[in-house]
Amino acid sequence: MSFWVDEIVDGILAKNNKDSYLITDWKTPSGHVHIGALRGVIVHGVVSEGLESKDKTTVFQYGFDDYDPMDGLPVYIDQDFKKYMGLPLCNVPAPDGVSESYAKQYAQEFMNVIDKMSFKTKIVWTSELYKSGKFNQAIKIVLDNAQLIRQINKEISGSDKGDDWFPLNIVCPKCGKVGTTKVYGWDGEKVKFKCEKDLVDWAEGCEYEGEISPFDGNGKLPWKVEWPSKWSVFGSDIEGEGKDHAASSGSRQVADKIFREVFKGQPPFDIPYEHILIGGAKMSSSKGLGVTAAQMAELLPANILKFLFTRTKYKRAIEFNPEGDTIPLLYDEYDRCAADYLNPPAGGDTDMARAFFFTETDLEKDLPQYYLRFSKIANFLQMPRIDILTYAKEEKTSDLTEVEKVEIENRIEVAKKWLADYAPESVKFTVQENLPEITKNLTETQKNYLHQLADVISKQEKWTGEDLHKAIHDLKNETAIAPKDAFSAIYITILGKDSGPQAGWLLASLDHDFVVERLREI
Ligand SMILES: [Zn+2]
Image (cartoon, rainbow, N blue to C red):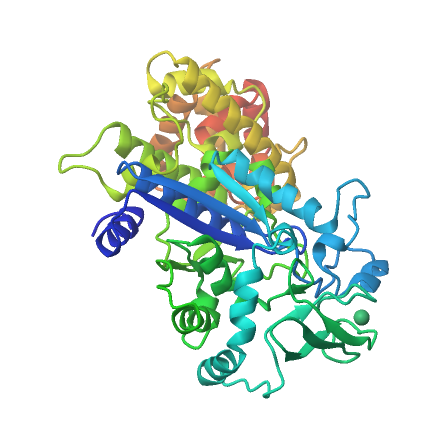
């Protein structure tokens, strides 16, 4: 089994080996874009990079569906925006009062994240495509084949919309809504439509009824039909989607069948990818704020954010909890993958080395050969008097290179933000100024251990973290105290809680006399 990106690339080449490929993906800018939507961008983006590494040329076209109706009001949007429900997102004003439209505001926010990842994307907007006539031919084909589309819908999803249903929504010339209109007739040039009061429960139509040309932006295809229409307009070679769409009798199956039978084409190579789960719950992109892509791009450097998605096979769900231990563990895994890439084990590239390869955009530049663990940095930041770069130099046992220093400094910045805004209480600690109340609960054995530790520490004025770490262990073995009891006694006495960072470094970071007095105070 090769690495998942290589597997997909091999699959594409085996199915359709050509010189250049068009990779397409789409997103409705209906609000802050969730971190989950990055999976689509990254899966398509790395497949594009994988093909290029095999000397193919690729275009990665990312489209914003800004002609979709506003069909929900995110919790962070003013209730006043309810009046815009049903309008195409490109015609809804921007909540920030500055951007060109609602769609542009949120699309731009997401584009900034995509740009940070250094993917070369060609951005398109469905509103512009409709208005410029790009969809005209597809609209004609769809309306001419309305009966066949009704039948496919019924066969696969079981929904029967009736014989007077045409797969098109007109942008109502009176109220401007696109979500409320129903087309019920087509004569080859014009469609008959009505803006219905109760067609959907999220918007109310104005009941205007009339005839209009469906072309040049007057109409918009419903998305299950728009999807294959896009393939026919652009000639997509590769396009995947989130697993829920890929399920049997899901929208991908409908789109594939419409593409084969109505547009007489071969659907693009499919990449059905799994979701990302936050705290066990699948994220929804329009309800609540959750974790947005922009928020995570602000916290994490582009390569670490990208690594979150490259490391996990596309068919496996990603569990992500920035308020848990996901981020320190992500860094640890990144460090292991970097090590595999930099010093390949016998037997060739591992999955870990390949994950690193698809994460880093510039492998020609100088790379760090040594990484200081993120979790250690997060701990050190909470201890007084620790010089992190000096610690790193000692751990590495030689001078740090420039890129190694920069990497550590970046991690310090990330760890500071993480501790301030996300980190769980379990990793946070504060050295207690006074003897904590809960030391009352220490056992005689624990107290004894602490007194003896005070004697050991008092024998010598200066301690390194490592020497103190060894001394703590030696004493623990001599006194035959259970390891857990020994360490929790130290943490309770210094931090007022029963867990903490590496005890040797913690005590070495504190004032010598303070430590001795505190241990004797017990
Ligand atoms: Zn209307």
